[in-house]
Image 1: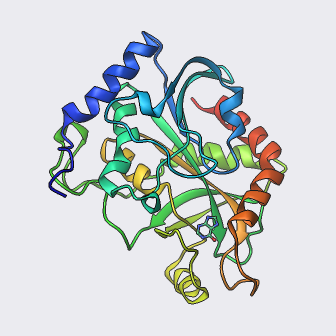
Image 2: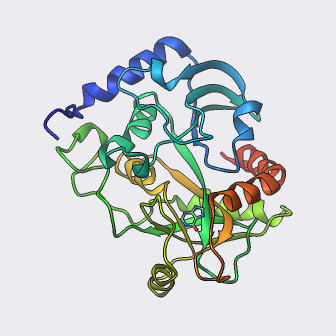
Amino acid sequence: MNDRPVFNYEYYQRSADYIRKQIGDFKPKTGIILGTGLGDVADLIEAECIIPYEDIPNFLTSKAPGHKGRLIVGRFEGRKVICMQGRFHSYDGYHFEELSIPIRVMKILGTQRVIISNAAGAVNTEYRPGDIMVIKDHIKLTGSSPMRGPNVPEFGERFFDTTNVYTPELRKIARQVGEDSELTVHEGVYFFYPGPQFETPAEIRAERILGADVTGMSTVPEALAAAQCKMPCLGLSLVANMAAGVLGQPLSGDEVEETAKMVAPLLLDYFKKLIRKLP
Ligand code: HPA
């Protein structure tokens, strides 16, 4: 703990300054954090600039297999975006405090909203693999907070409100776009589970009693960082599998990847429409 950096404003500013030097006066309005299933978005961005994470001072490098670690700044469906291809999870070994870095750096760069996607397991037995869930709210009872440690007042208050972490106006647009999509789009509650092991069937039963619709290992730390600095946020879950115990068969990471691959074209189509509809 003692040799960890001091996460003060200047810490994040160093990353932002480096990125700003690369992108000049290009001002991305929308931040995108790509989860499993939406990887193709990265290839479709008309890039102004691609920055490997390891080149950015004070940034983190991606450790998860299949997650490329680079920042892509450019236009997607005509919108100016800054996109993280490859993301950070607590199960990779990062401290929760470190998981706030991407959002805080985007905030300094002037990004006005963020879309965070993930793959998740269905706790709600009416959901099916291949469905989408717009995150309405989350439950996070384990692990630490990305805001642990000295507060950085430039990013918001010490004790900040989490009533609308997932911005109602953005959720409404995401639901509306879902009505024209071939995918089934729900709205529900995401349960944060730190992983990397999948939940036990008993844990999933507990999550269901607590009000969860899907369960996953990401998104919430970033969404909390966005909430503190009042950055509007949209969270999208791709339902990749039925959660543990629902079908009575073992879960595997391969199953998650397979569903993601199968739905990717429709998901991409949905995502394009969504981006175009944003104000
Ligand atoms: N549990 C947790 N995380 C996940 C799952 C799951 O079932 N599927 C994809 N990510």
